[in-house]
Length: 366
Image (cartoon, rainbow, N blue to C red; front, side, top):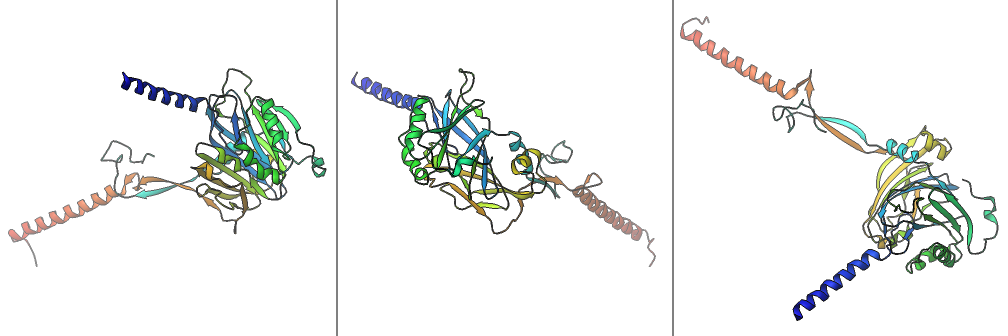
């Protein structure tokens, strides 16, 4: 009986631990911090953002892919200056995805492979906004300085002179201010940054947040190209970032900021931007640089991404190779070659036999 009692205690403890992990709030982060309500959970699986910068103004259009059981969540993003917020254009992501598609090239091989005749019955082919005008005035008191409803988003713009403004906003909207968030906000407070605080709540109360959320566009003045990432260090799960940068020149991150080495997936000038991209950039030619970066251990993130002009506007495009068997006139070259060799060898053998036959019967004339 005593052994059974111990087993039950262990099982009960494990169950309580697992239950606690399920109901405890999970502070999933993308570009900023995402906080679920109450005992729900939410996780940012992937973050795709477009950054447009002309040396004076920066536009960030971002889209999150999330999962979890939270009916609502708060998303916090620090910004260096007074920001305006509006819904983003989904078409931007489609256009840039198309512009950065790898180039398809074909390379040929000689000998047949699996899937080629005679190894199969296949056919021989391989499978295969400008900131508000009062920005220069004295900083407003702590609190909400702007609020609007954008679809399923309740957007509040808060001053950053004190984290208490953010704490009060979260509590008024049913969210608990994470203790870990306070110290991470201190660098932004010291630099007098502000916050964009957004409450994500679907119109249907029975709907939970999941999948790809509607993109948001945030605009602010900035003399340097910066992509806020510091709050992502609060994430408990690995983070994945896709970043499209539209600027006068090819751009590169100043550092890895604690993640894997950023991988450039495209670099090139868009001389005639597509409609949505042209609307974002003013229709002028612009240089596009696309990055992919993984953050296996978000706790190692030590700052925001600052992007600088590269030494040269060197273009780059990924290549996807399609392997095909070498053909001439629709026939595999290897088959023609082997067939030709067989014909030559056979002809040689027949010639030698005929010659021997002629010698045998004395028909050879010297």
